Length: 311
Image 1 (cartoon, rainbow, N blue to C red):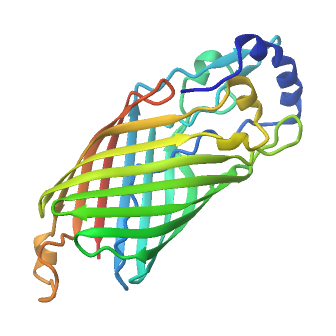
Image 2 (cartoon, rainbow, N blue to C red):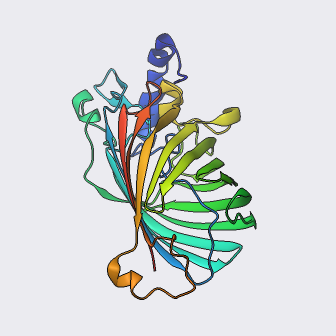
């Protein structure tokens, strides 16, 4: 649920915003940290390389909140609501206890500094948004049934100068019994740098985010899952609020929905399998599903498409 200032307080704050607009040339402030719709895993094999493509398309996005100033200036909320996102990544197995990942992400974002209320509802062209690097430390490997535990640390840098960088860290918990498995990825997202508000402070807040999955393995080739993703913005009230946040408050997002994964090994790759390889381990996994928004600040539906290929 969004937590914002009262209407009277918003109008009263506009005089401060007009002064701030004379100082700041752009309003590229950080909204809630909404990561890729992907659950981290503890599988780590030395020398293994995996290509990943994570894609999301949002429908029924909430209408952007705006305020028009006395001089016609438009101030719009900074909720994180890209129309589409595409992440391309390479994951490397370093040891059985450590793996890393590098990647880039493209987004079709909402317009910055809109010239009108109508323009505030529109979107930029699809463009490179950020670079990222990640390490996963497997503290307790899980082989088959049982419990696994690890830690993920990820660093993200915006493609455009002046934007906020983020450091993401948290545990990875896995449990499996027969065809059932459960994965929990709670994380804290720390923001660094970024634009300054009218008081000269950067919004170096901390968000809480989660990526959870309950999965049933129907066969070696088919998995059914229920996945949940969400973000609680600005835990503990930390950070010098951006001018947009001072006007419109913070935003939380929560999604839940079914995902189907089709796992297979192409014929040309199957012919070159090593005789000691596990025949149930497939080299390609394709995922498709829909995540439904659980509150007013989240898109009604997010279509998830994923592809993972092991080399």
